[in-house]
Amino acid sequence: MVISVPRLVIAAPSSGSGKTTVATGLMAAFASRGLAVSPHKVGPDYIDPGYHALATGRVGRNLDAYLCGTELIAPLFAHGARGCDLAVVEGVMGLYDGAAGEGELASTAQVAKLLRAPVVLVVDASSQSRSVAALVHGFASWDPEVRVAGVILNKVGSSRHEEMLREALDESGVPVLGCLRRAAQVDTPARHLGLVPVAERRSDAVDAVGAMAEQVRRGCDLDALYALARGAGELSGAAWDAAEVVASSPPPPLPVPTLGAAPPDPRHRSERPRPQTPDGLSVVAVAGGAAFTFSYAEHAELLTAAGAEVVTFDPLRDEQLPDGTGGLVIGGGFPEVYAPELSANEPLRKAVAELAFGGAPVAAECAGLLYLSRELDGQPMCGVLDVAARMSERLTLGYRDAVAVSDSALAVAGTRMRGHEFHRTVVEPGAGAAPAWGVRAPERRVEGFVQQGVHASYLHTHWASQPGVARRFVERCRTS
Image (cartoon, one colour):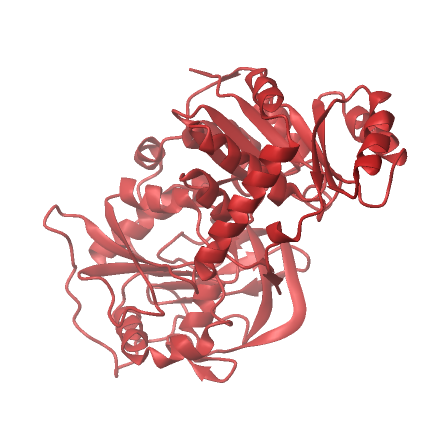
């Protein structure tokens, strides 16, 4: 199979240069021309893809060479871009920044090379003139395999400023494909973990994306950018397919009682039937809404391929789990922002606790861990885990190599996965009698909780790297 979707990678010398504004604006501007635009984000970021989806009407997808491996970048890209006229890939951090201590691994530059895609460098020109040429020359010449094919100048102050920048870049050999003036209306609010997600400010987010698109239309040469995208090199290989990878993953071993797991709470114990739809599918409820916005699209696709009916519910609004729920997935997000509202929804908290104490499989990552705790910043939560969670001034951030310590609904002990942590909260204690993961860096430690069917941890993982996780989870829904 030959992959020939026109594509661009939008990169920058550093964070804060305007990648998200430019990438999202380009996506929206090209979509308004009637093109089917496939949006992608390098790295583990969950928030930017929400803005990308708003701009294109398609699911925003991540390309993370650390979490998924370099061999999956092109297949995952092809899966997302299937049937599209153009793909726009927003980079992460600076062009050559990747996983700490791992060279180019997971950098925008590496992904651009794996996709054989031209790079457009977004430069914050607010405090420079002729020096911009030296900066662009350095980035363009650092790695000959990375094709820096154009520059978009951001935060340009005046016509005279633009003239000086263009004159300087004439000597660099890298063409200027856009020039954006300072514009407050495209700013998006941020807080302790970055931009505020689309789900929390949808009306304002729509306006912001529209402003980004208008600024890009006025300041960028869209025809030249599309021509550049059409010059991307062809890729060979098959697109990633959830059904194929699930079918080829090893069959899940029979459930094994977890050593050290907390016994069922008799107050919640019930003889739970094995719920299924009339078609024989297991219902997996996935938390969504404003408090739980972090998820990778491939997770739901893998669960579906493994035989689940995936149903989304909102813990802020819904007082009961979806009918027939046999398993529960609670991903990341911002429960700390909505702790009073989540706590006030007592009927749902009780329903989650009953499901978990009845032995159903529950996969909880980061925000999900907080929601399952006894309390969050003093507010009662579901009480599935006997831990207290609270906000912290310390940011925990970084990629992690992990190994499953305990048999669980997700993996057998010894399963290796890579993950990512990103939070300003702590739970006490940080691990249960049966921990979820052993983590190698930044220090050796165990973390998380395996308790009956519950697997709860701070670690965000990408199941495309281990599709057997979804197969095992759905099988556990049938047998627990």
